[in-house]
Length: 197
Image (cartoon, rainbow, N blue to C red):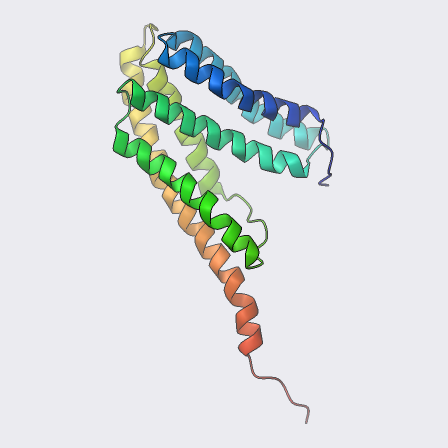
């Protein structure tokens, strides 16, 4: 059951996750990469726990359904930009990742005005987000003093590229779903009226 509550445990976790984004950026671009990655990892773990707790405690809310994906997008964009700033991620790949989110945010109000309801996140979209968060985190690790930093770059790039591909595949699926919802009422209006015998 979805409620309109605001102060729930999952919502507070999502708010904390969002609040750590500027702190992470500051740490990362000022030479404190290790501390930044630890903070980022802790924040990323809350993404699992807030969803789990929301279902477990019966605290699924309208605000939570907005905050959770917003926090994911903020984390992905922030880390992608930070990695570009230290030359750990190609700008064109970061641009593709960020562009997808900007386009979706831009067209969504248009879809809402056309009467398209909330589109559920599909498995491809969830996998894309998880792959990007995982891959970007490993790229961030490659900029730290951790022993496995050199290995982390290879792992990170593999998952980021895979996540970017899945990101656009899921966006296409969302667009197709939205288009079919827009077309359905039009098709009903254009259908010939049935006449009685």
